[in-house]
Length: 238
Image 1: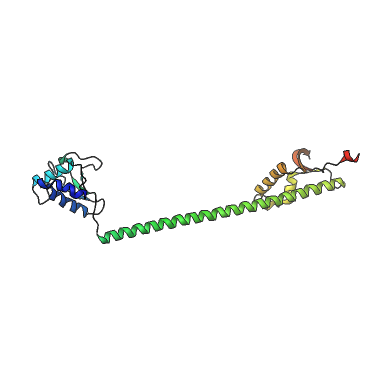
Image 2: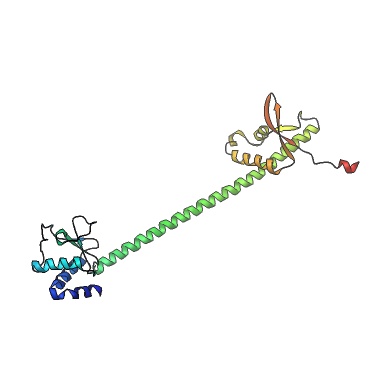
């Protein structure tokens, strides 16, 4: 509607029909494709069936008009704004008209592209979900292995203390590394390192019956565990 109104203003000078011809020719081109005019010297070469005066008048009217007629005037540098007729080298359609076949092919291509993007996103989210579930399962398994290791450590330290009370052990404490070597076979120590470290940390902060000390054993300072007996009610017995 706006385009027809703009052309109506130019009917009295003859530019309207010429602009309509340009608009129809430019609109028939594919989107983004230019309807090139030979780059003339000064003024632009008239390649239409109209007179040169109407040709230049139409170009001048398009440049000076504030209406959107569906035609862009382009110069040598497409990024620069054309302000004079002598700088015009081509016409470009602002509202191209496409046939039914072209519209269907473009719609089909757009739909296929959107479907592919959707499935790629869905596959990515599905893979991320599988990765997170695997990670959660590994954390749960590691947590369970840590608690089992804590239980085994408590049993070893307690049994060692009982043996010491029965004069079966020389010291009431046992080295931490000795306990590790007893519970974990050599081929599994690298794999179980994280579980062992977490178990040691758990005992240090959550188990009051086991006390961590530093003693010199066989000429070397090492960390040891000592089993601490529950406090006796000696005062009440007295």
